[in-house]
Length: 57
Image (cartoon, rainbow, N blue to C red; front, side):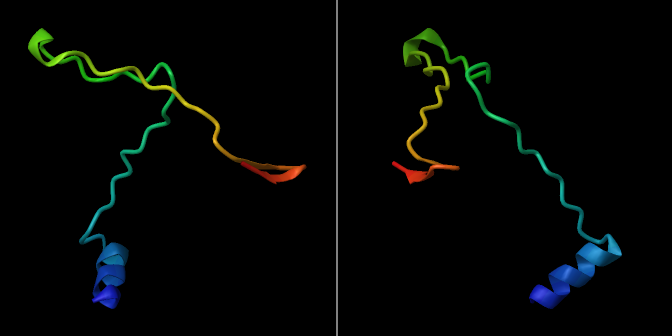
C-alpha cells in the first residue's frame, strides 16, 4: 500500500497541497453570530524550550 502511494506521488497521480499557515496573535479567528458568543483570539505561551542552556520546562 505504501509502495502504491509513493509510486502515485512520483507519477503525479496524487498531488499534495500544503495548506499550513504560521500561527500568531494576528491570526484571524472565526466570527460567529452573537447568539453563539465569540471565539477568543489566539495566544501563544511558551511552555518549554530547548536552547543553549538545555531543555527547560
